[in-house]
Length: 330
Ligand code: CP
Image 1: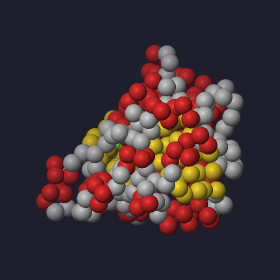
Image 2: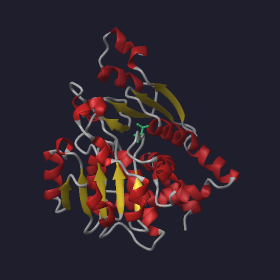
Image 3: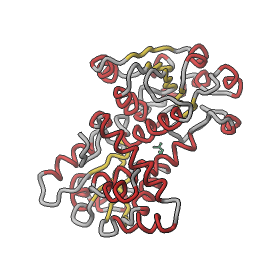
Image 4: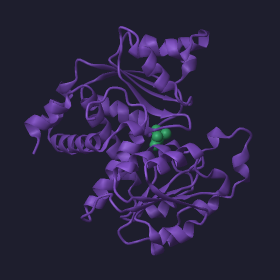
């Protein structure tokens, strides 16, 4: 599979797709270094329009998709609060999303509702105005484009020290029960040989059984533990996450001592010298601000990589990737 239309969950990507996507990403980054290249990229999709429908808060995903569209010359419309749309009059989200397809060529959406993007894609597939749907985060469920940028960042960072993801040990730390970035990234890591994932969390925030089943079915190696300090010296990358208390039913997160899952400056001393510290962001206190200056901290790179991988993804969906790789490819 190297063609793609809807982007709904990370399990739909295969290794060939990842390799191609990251080649496009690297090429367009080079092209964008000159004004001529930037103007060229902006001409590629200036006949296209996109809708950004983000009814759950977002800074990075929204802005990186918006800027990715702008880089390719795509015009964007947006709704960021359903109370400003006709949903307030009782229109269903499905009808609202079908309406967008009357005006635009692509829908990029974030929703607190798990599975909504899948439902909308299915609905649009049966209409004369079928357009691609990109899931920019759905409930506790999936954040597939975050996984794409995370794997890109891991490969790019390990590549600098002469390696790739094969054989790496990666710790996913914090609220891994409700963290959709962890769920999408863990699934995507199946495309790399002998990766070992350490899921590090309080007892009440352990990974869900459906993810565990997926990892076992795909022959992936993983360990579950509550002991963060024991894992730090062992791993090649640490993926920190914040507590996802927006998913609380009755304030249950307040009873959890999350401070055991904070990365501090002292931890830098026991971390391998070429290990990576990652975070999908936003953060609260999971990573001490002083850690930002350490060269192993890669979370600000993740943000920037997110924009470029999303440019590549959109170009690939519309077949514009050939106009990136052919005139400028290696
Ligand atoms: N990582 C991420 O999804 O960030 P935002 O919620 O700011 O989009």
